[in-house]
Length: 374
Image (tube, rainbow, N blue to C red):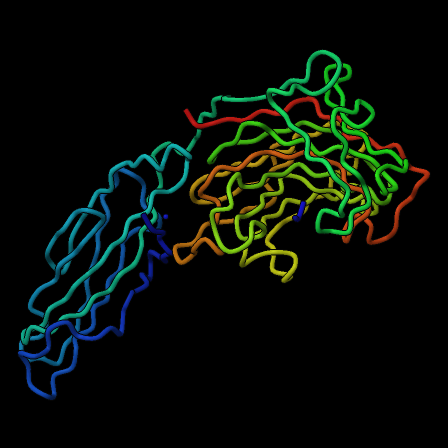
């Protein structure tokens, strides 16, 4: 719904790539006027080395100073070494609990015979020995019983002001016609009825709990009908970044579906830099032909390094945190909560009109489960 430690770049082992900088000399006052700053470059012997495996770094420095390069100094993570060729074994790090590659900054400093220096820096991505994550459930709702949703786990957002997307529903509160427990499921149901100046009613539920990182699974059967716009998604708890809550503080869409494009499932992120208003949002889609007639598991894994979106265990979209990103691109370092709703109409859901004969339309949710790595 609308409303990284550092990385190793790929290396070709047979023909290693070299890193160089054109930075200014740090100590050239000991040379002659004709002496220019030296140039530092280096290569790495392995493409994404594994934790515990020895890696070789080869320096190539050049200088027009008489005597050439006098010293090579390395900073590898928190380790320092000297020499034109050094070997290093990377340790395991806590970041590997997400099954992701650890990241280390590597800097080579060369000093020539005149005392002038140059640096070359890169990041090295190191694969954990065992990249498998064991997820442990920390929260969930199986929707047992009858009546209204559990008020200790869910609260309603209400209103009918268009929700920033020209939507046409009014979200009600504590109305079993729009949200109820039924046969071990949560039913969110949109109706064609006049209410508070709106032509439709529906429900929008938010989780009372919130999380920073984790795996989020929702098993659901989606509504069809032209004009429906169901979503399973996440928003930030706080207005931490920028000068407006959305999109500055981010949005993660685990699942969106519009009724006129039946069976096409979307996973998307929105931020200040990447959002649908500027047509820069990042996302992916996958076709699930029976999404409106059968249950499917919609899931997202959110880690410090990336957001991964799945349907039935198949990953179809990944958004990676980059070294150069600030909050404008990656505000996903704060707590977020879950939302579940059916919108009616709107700039996307109503792009091809609304079929009133399709209502009522329901989204049936079997369970919601939240996991953290053990």
